Image 1: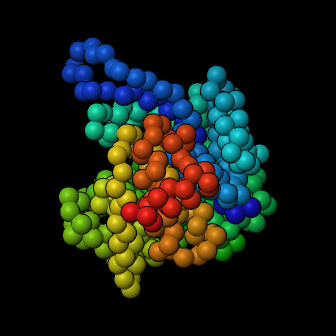
Image 2: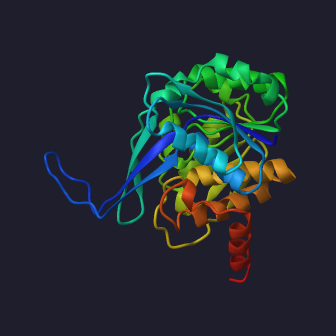
Length: 308
């Protein structure tokens, strides 16, 4: 198995709006969709769509969404042996509001994701130790994230930690044990308490985290592209300009694509270039996982970019 994703499954409840209602106000919205999401599942699907062998460790609730969530993962070839149902608990749900400029605002109800425990990770240890990369996020309990990091270190497996949603309770000492720490600029602002309104300020905030001992920091910056920092250098990747329809899940698309190419080729800079293009493709369609291209679609997109 190439990649193990230990993380969340969510049901995306996506409302497309022209404006947010004021307190006590009711407004009509033009469109609504239900989709499979969750940062963990999104990243797993992105990598799997590109051809990576992916296993998922996660939870679903005892409700109408559970079977659809598991079947969706399996449809993309993801090993779901360790995606388990939590009795008497709802699945994770993410109400998402997408405005006319394609920007999104997201609420999450973790539900069953809060029940992914260190013991669940231990049950998958024999399979996990054969993986070439572990991806983690923060929509599961921090204790489980830390336990997964310990297990990854035990077997010398590279780890990507996506600190999303950002939590100031995250133990930086555990973050420093990961090979790649990958926040977006908003998460960077929350984690550092510093402004991120320009590339210079993003760089300054990023360096405060590096000073604490992080190995590699990759910051996704939306329309500004992405930036890779470590103790030796700074590398910037320009964004790919497209007409955005819905930016939901673009960061997850970036991480899933980056993980696939990192495992495949080991070239960080090239993986970032591909990930930037992959995320750009994803924002041209509605939803999260459904907007991610498969290998053929992505290669066609790359071909069009090379002709510009």
